[in-house]
Structures are given as structure tokens and as C-alpha cells.
Image (cartoon, rainbow, N blue to C red; front, top):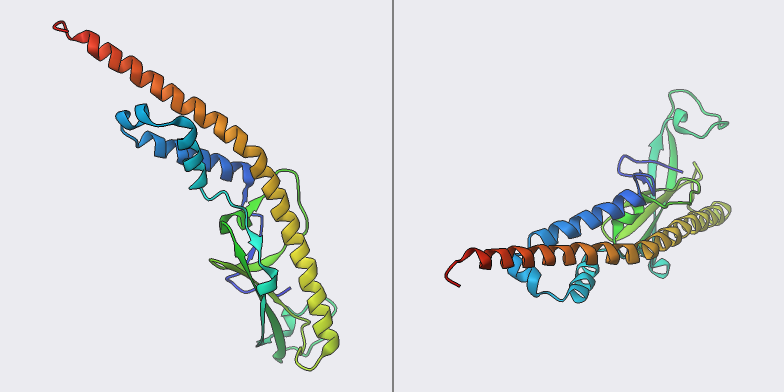
Length: 210
């Protein structure tokens, strides 16, 4: 409802496929940094489990019960009002903004991802390290206005429902990706092991004194 420069449109910056494919590339780059002796000695299944665990594929979960609120004041010009509102040109208007800070656990990067087969209306928020801040207003005073307070609470609930629907869709995408990731990494590591074995065998054969 009310934008500031720090606010972003959630779930719109990149497709989840691109995000997850980058995770796969990052893991492969990590494996490529291993020494040949280390690759030869690792337990492939356990190594993959460890690599995936450290890849921050944990989709955020909102901690709604820990939501905090505050009211801030701002002056705006009439041109910033929603369509249909009357105003006096050149006169600033005093409004109040309801700030809802909602903590979350998980990787915040998912808030920038668009799920594969899911899309709802846009949600605007400040994306902080461990919380979202939604700034909502009735374009008037909130303090002492019970009708406005109820309206803003319901507006928050609608926004949170949309956010959680997106997160559920992203969790589904991640759950479907994990088996593909495990299969790809298993093949990748086993191929590296085979190449190293062939190289070592050829190296031994090079020595005519053995």
C-alpha cells in the first residue's frame, strides 16, 4: 500500500529454476575445489548429504506469533494519494503508517524467487536479514481510529496469506528438486572418481620399473 525506496516486490526477482540451478553449480564448484585424493576417499552419499545441508535450501517460515507493530507519521503530497481521493494542490497531507515486522527463519533469498506454477498478487515489503516489514496505511490517521485499525489488520492478514501461499509453492519446488539434485551430484562425483582412478592407473603404467 505504501512504498519506500527500500521496499521490494516479493517473489518477482528471479525464477526458482534459475535459483536452484545456481545452487547445483555452486555445489559442483565446491566439489571441483577438492583434491583428487579427497574425492577418491569420500563417501559419496554422506558427502552429498553434507553439501545439500550446507546449501541453504531451507524455505522461510514466518514466525507470525512474534510480529511487532509500530505507527509512524509521514507527510505526502496529494498526488501520492490513491486515485479518487480529493486534495488541495500544494498542501502536504499528514498520514500515519502501520509498520508490521514479521520475523522468519530460513533463507531470505527465497523471498525473491517466483515459484514454477504459481502466481498471486504482488506483495510489497522491506526484506531484512531475519524479518519482513510490511508498511500499510489508510492514507489518514490511524491513532484512535478503530475502523482503520481493523481494516489494516485485515489487510495484513490478506498479505500474509499470499506470502505463505508463495512459500508453500516454493517448498514444493524445492522438495521436487532435491531428488534431482542428489541424482545429479551422485553421477558427477562418481564420474570424477572414475576419471581419477583411470588417471592413477595410467600413471602407474607409465613407470617401466614397476
